Image (cartoon, rainbow, N blue to C red; front, side, top):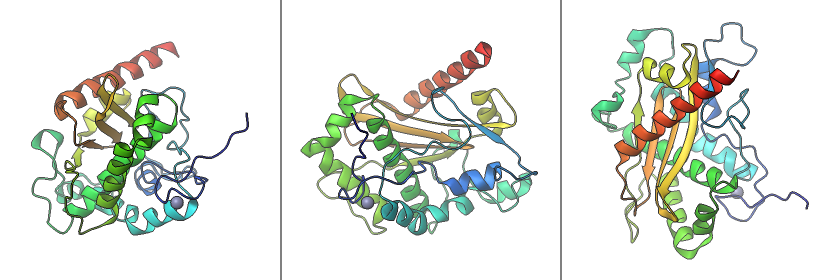
Length: 257
Ligand SMILES: [Zn+2]
């Protein structure tokens, strides 16, 4: 069997031949340092999936080059400065960003100008996670749902939310995507290393019910979550379960080495 590319998840017409960063590469560069940079601060550890590469953020084939780079220039380029101070070594400058810790709720008190951009970036990461999981063969019922008329309609609505700054709810009422900041000690608890930051993602849903999915991604000091409209599970409970799960996976794989 020859390996062929599926089509781009955005334009749906061209082959998905780009290596898409689910989490923007600019985040990795700013926080972790370039690979050959002597002043590199952190390495990172993809937790919960020992089969994935550890030297770079995973890059599934999701989009054509054009769509992938358009997201980069239109939206993702805004994210590093929203999440990180220019000087990542200064605790004070982190505080000045005004990011709200996980247990204080998402987006609270964000400057109004910044909030829509954060939401759309969070949604973009979650949307890519959903497709990455559907494409990696581990969630056949999610993949089937995304090929169904209902799944396709939902997918296009999610895409509109991401691409249109003036998006308004239509027949499909999307839930708000969320973005949380986690404390460095929480990040370290996930990787079990002070100088290793977590990156991982998941799509959780009730058995055979992909339309009830909650999508999560953790990267560095941030967590993104997006519930599909028919999701009935509790966002916080599901997040707590998943974080516990990846911490245990990491502990098990550390012991195995
Ligand atoms: Zn495309």
